[in-house]
Image (cartoon, rainbow, N blue to C red):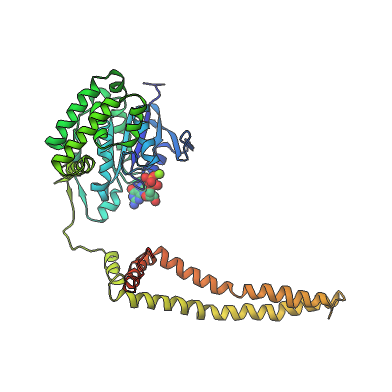
Length: 405
Ligand SMILES: Nc1nc2c(ncn2[C@@H]2O[C@H](COP(=O)(O)OP(=O)(O)O)[C@@H](O)[C@H]2O)c(=O)[nH]1
Ligand SMILES: [Mg+2]
């Protein structure tokens, strides 16, 4: 396998730890640039997997593989056109229902996938227990690896899984989300039509394209339109119309629902959460500070404290700076100018009454600003400011000024 240019892509929602895992795998062997013609960052690196050097591409974070954003289009075009040997799909172990949504869509692209459940430490802290082997079994046996990216936990496992999976296109498990009779019937008709076209079926996986057409994917529709597949697009439109008539719901919504249902089935019994009611300290504080009634006096009290802190704690510093500027500094300047023979001249007036008094008048506010910004920074970083917006929004609504006013 030496010398074969293996490429592995990392996909996942934003903030699930893709780049952390990318960095841990590639170390210093990285190249950062842009995707051709796009303003989205492209990170590529080389990792040593077994005896091979493997190229790893950190794909942009996306929540879905629709065509609603540049990131989504880049990600899916890369997987479809570049056909990486493997896609490592990173999900957040503490938010699996949500973050598996992208993983399911990558699996639907029928590429070899290794599923990484990162943030194992966060899940553990929240009392969430996962059965990775069970999840793997329910996903047709694709490798499922638990990691803590920030501590490089699970990376050896991940590398072993990668080594065992690269180029295993032949042994791909087929995992199909069951979209229900109505959708499946329409999909299989489109599927046959796509599979019968040598060019199209070479370029796309037929079932995937059928799903995308029912989802009314604008990007793919435009591409197929340009390539002269009007008949197929018409067939997809008619199918979507029939689905809407019968289900009273558009195909895209039904498809999304079915994917979440599929995820629910995969996780059912494989993920255990602590009993409801086990609130964290942070939740308790949240309830108090965002309380519909107590929230407002707490907000006013905090603002009063910020004001007091700013005004009174900074007062001695302010006085001291004022004293230094109007005392010694002014005296030194007068003495210096006197020694230079400029005592009592307009130059002295300019320096003392103009420059020193003017700059001094600004500098005395530095302590005030320092304490004010420190207080605001603490409130901001603790997350209180964001919560207080919620509290004050309720008050403002009472007087008819909601957030959009
Ligand atoms: N607690 C915890 N934090 C992590 C873990 N992996 C990554 N992070 C942090 O999560 C944040 C987002 O990670 P990043 O790799 O930038 O995510 P990306 O947007 O998917 O590339 C960073 O602050 C990481 O340090 C993990 O396993 N546990
Ligand atoms: Mg990143």
